[in-house]
Image (cartoon, rainbow, N blue to C red; front, side):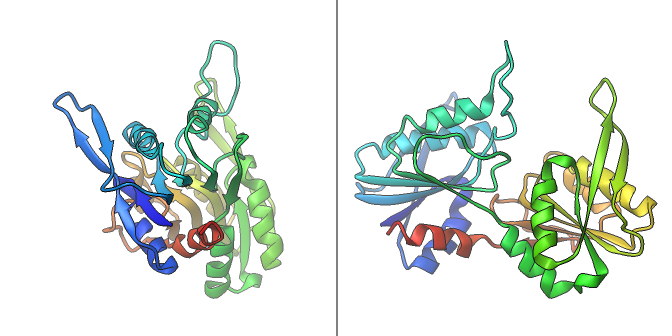
Length: 288
């Protein structure tokens, strides 16, 4: 087996390959004058695992073209460290369902097995797949940094309550949940904290940070009810425009994300990164 990677996944892919003692090869992307892409490979392959993330539309189409370039490869596995469009999972009349469209496209390619990492929702796909979680990494890091009696695990909204409950039960700590109220324009107007957080270090658990608004609202609400301080853990640091500045100036004391998405390495001291390379390497090892 060899590791093939897209342009946005080189660092993580090489770290994974090093742990597995495998060679790596990049997707070679050529752009025409109108920005059309063409993807080629350095040679033919028999057995590969592709490491990619689809943060942007260009990332997504690069992946599709790469999978097409691998159409004559005997075995192709795909490890998606971040899946774009996973939040668009509602099936409504006269409205696209981006998650379903994305997964349907993926299933048209010659992929033997998919590996997903903390998808916003469980992938609905007929092909064999494994859905990994970074929660064990977070649990280990929290355990090393904080005493269980001093912390409360907090879900920033109802959608992440199950993950937060798992972390709280594993660490044998209390659990709290933030419940958001929105107005007609889908703007958050109020956040209510369910659970006692007074004089506690509140540890927010989320799957992704996009604009950062959810975590900032949750942090403000927790501090208003006398939390000692707030820290946050999230798998995917999307950090859309303005998010890093908002989070840097927020009341959140520490923000921990993984390297599932390549982002600015020159982050302020408020940010920390945990690597998912070993987690992914362990899942890929059984495919060799």
